Length: 379
Image (cartoon, rainbow, N blue to C red):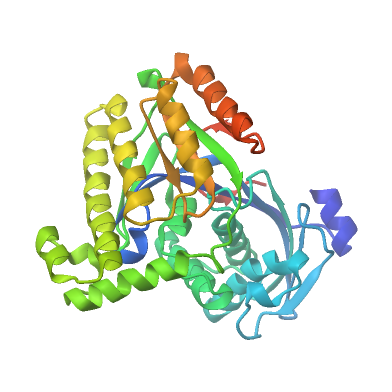
């Protein structure tokens, strides 16, 4: 990366910053409803090799995307990823972060981005890019921001600058997770705690299955689902769906069947997060399968954001003897997680691959997920 940086920008870098992707063990579409989530960081992520600029310009290049160097002023306005040329839409994310952080004393920089995280797979490659950029800019300009607050600033950048109405989970997971643990995050207060999560000790493997069905959250149904949740909360007279304590009463007071389904998912998913934390703290990792299955059915039937490849992967995994599985991420494409006994992992992979081949779909990709450290300076 050092040589590539020097060749592109004509000078040496000052450091390398890495931010991981994440898998959300459970708690999907609860974050922007002020609820609970339980993500953990992956070994894979995004690295940013960077050097400071003092002229208010941020220049970025990506080893994956190509398209040369993109230059923008940190004092500019909103960055809309849909307004960039298709081969440069990714640049809206680091530029957006630079424009938000300028209010806190950062400035320009030269940034070379590299990633071993699949894009569009529901593993939060965009948040990893944002968080690595944020750490680089803060370090280069000597700005200290507590990580919980930095996560909120990066979330704001994606909301306001890029136009994706995401919640806090992805940024918090990338910045706050630790090795060997999941992160129990209260998305209203921002408070978090570490929860032991060691599948290997229990003879289990958590597989991430990239279904190869990509999605675009800015133009897909993600924003619609968030709007539906906000509408339901308003009709129920609560600040957010996290505040619904009488589910039966709430469902009975809503006439719109779509809103009823959205509320049912969010409220029961929050309960599943709390139950999963209890199981992990008790060391009952093997019992998580039922929680994953229930979450997937709710996302499929109540929130209606699953997709054929995800449903087929979960079904094939269960037929092959997996303990449980569910779609992860914003929906409409991306990845599935599957919990299986380690000695059955090969059989589960083969079963999913055979199902895809039978349907004429591109073969899925697999990786074994191990809870890993959060974002950090790596060189």
